[in-house]
Length: 94
Image (cartoon, rainbow, N blue to C red; front, side, top):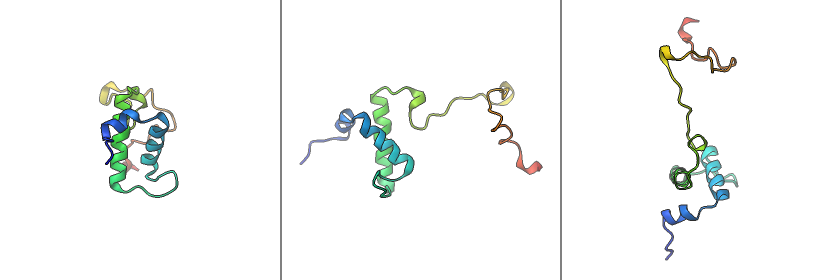
């Protein structure tokens, strides 16, 4: 019986394995083209998140990172690229 635990696997994970798992989760398939099951996706994502935490990957480089933005009257919209301006407009007014 293997004495490999999830925690030990995370500690021994290489950056190459991390990148491979991250890509598998993003594409929902293994590098050979086979689709990930829901359970595999969940486990891979958990491994990626744990690796990022254990390896102290900068927050802005982590999976699922969203840049914090202000909203409401405090937001000027000046940081929104022109090609994205108007995407949030009310479509019912057209």
